[in-house]
Length: 202
Image (cartoon, rainbow, N blue to C red; front, side, top):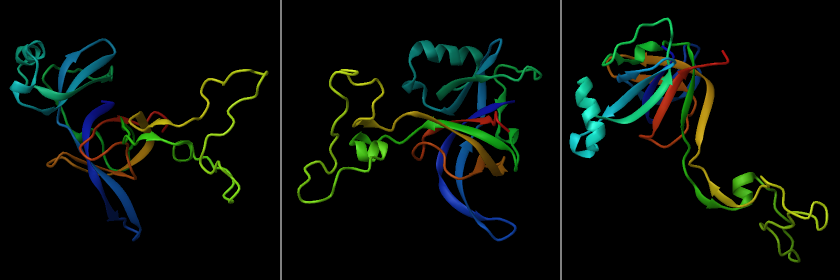
């Protein structure tokens, strides 16, 4: 298996065997029910919700396969060497301590921000005569190119983007509590949904 769905619980710290303090993120990973099987992917469901909160067409699909309705549904690439069954549950024991994973989530939204916060501009002169401490300033020349280049760094909406952090080390797994402890931070706010995959570049 290559991936599982989860929910970010929060950050804490543990001590390694050599006494180093390691910052970790606790993730509630699984159990994820297999909802459907396709040629190259499988559809997973995570985090059960009340039937009253699900639209009737989707509720009919859950009842047909005999699984309670799920709030977070995503397709992940399947492992061709494994025989999947609809209704089977995937749990956190897919990973073990020492593995490397890629974690995908929605970053924390920060609303409309200026260029200094959004792009790390240094800003203008901080003297009394300057009137452009944090302003945009010139964004293009007059005749050549005579326009503003696409993708120019400007103030705008910041955050709330799909972000993937690669090569995060798994510190510990707890099958009884469905916990996955990974080193460092992961995208999003607490209780935000995540996709945890086996690292592609390791």
